[in-house]
Image 1 (tube, one colour):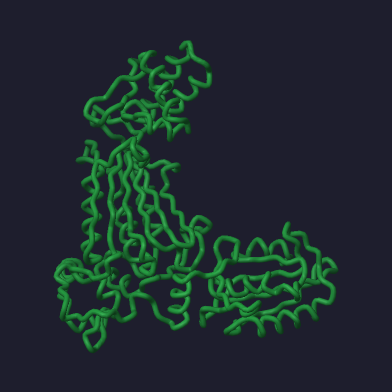
Image 2 (cartoon, helix red, strand yellow):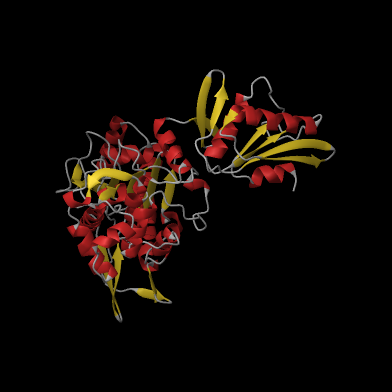
Length: 494
């Protein structure tokens, strides 16, 4: 394998054109970060633009690297040094596996600093990061730690009821010990405290909002529904399920053998995302809660804490993400209640539920995004641009209903709209803006200034002027009962 292939295959990689002995922090911070994270490699003899420069006396440089690591890192991480030869040039590859004795500190310049990896940078760990690293170094997780609360002071009615319903058996007091929810003295772990009916973990809450429109622009659109929930994790899950069901719709179509249901968002996918958001959130992040935000065209679920391994989900193949659980005790309890699987196939399940839906399109694939402290999933409304069919007919291809007729209807209306604006006495950029708005909202979705501002990135005044021109041209009409300043495109006869 050559150097460029190695750089391409290494998930975490730094490059140094030479060994900096007088400024070792410039590369030792990456050794600390890789040891505190998922591991990585530093290649000496390669420029920042990935040009293989090579090194003079690579063996001596390797010896100096080993010596500096031992002097400046505490505890001393396990590293592997390799001298690589290519095209007559020598390189030193320093491989750093994920460490077991976290946190690993860089010691020098009168400081003692642990570093973590964020994107392609190594940055100092803050207090919350250090707490996570200390837990990992002791082989413990947040949910396994003993809380200040006693089992006898709390009830677990909701947990017992759901466990009986979904697991088919009663949850005995001895199970609380064997499941890791309390110790033999009756002291609850953090997992047990989170599952108590009146959970004392106050930052374990769920905020749910159904927004009117496509965003939550302050002062322009109001929330149609807004709830804040606290209590047992089981209660939060049920509250979240109910909120989603109450604020999304389910269409259906007659078929020769009955009918096919078409929910805005596949129910199993929504449940999977909500379960993961509550179970895998970082409970060391005390200033944030799980959020469900529902818009006209999508639902977003936010959970405090990035990927447990420190990677960014948007850079991974979500069909092959290994299961690493931040809160394994809580995850095990929910697995026993058949809310999730132990083998960690959540991403695949979410995507497969979407792909099996009636009017799935590739552009409506669920999207996952994370950074060092947050995780988002976006589930698109599959019915947002699909007109409501009046005939009640549906066609099937190998058991899956299709909407070719519905898509054709929209394309026909789109062509008619395009023709209707071609002769307007307005400038071409204005026509293009009108077309862009129509393509986004269709002829059945109400919209106002806020939606136009979001779609074509203009000011409130410009959005109002565009609405005025479309009204004068007879393209839109006001919509009653959907708030002030809402309009809808007029369906032109074919």
